[in-house]
Image (cartoon, rainbow, N blue to C red):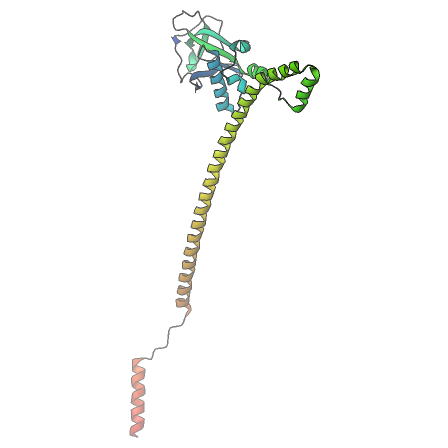
Length: 249
């Protein structure tokens, strides 16, 4: 697959499915383009495309995008340089690949897509992240504005802009921590179960070894102990005859 091509389209037009893309994320088909940081989302809604791209990156790399990018309050105009909606047609190429070609909205087979430059998008979001209102920053604001009304206004503006984003990030971190704790608890339970099974298996092995040792001891005793002396019947008869003859004399 390639990036959006400006050359005349070749190959039949088709409508992409999950088999043609990297997958469906947050309900939207997503694919990588030629550049590693470029994604194509098959939707004309910028916010849906950004959510899908964030889910794709989280699945592929484990990295979480800034909360501001997945917030429903995100203004598409603020990221227009990094997320652009276009109408294109998809065309088959050799080796089961495809390209997209710019098209008018009324072109047969045209679909709306959103092209995203994920690297620039995340960089811009990181630059806009609020700085926590530490006691030092609060004092700086108070020192800057001598009038109490202006001070309260500045602090209020800071809170209205930054606090919701920070709270959303806290919520996200709590969710991640909760997931981590659930995984840790599951692993602890599994380890305890395995430990109990190991102890039971060890006990059974020790019992079997003790029985085997006792059996070997008994066999060795039988093999090494001399059999008891038994008199021959003929010898006993001769002995009795000799005794009788001696008495007759």
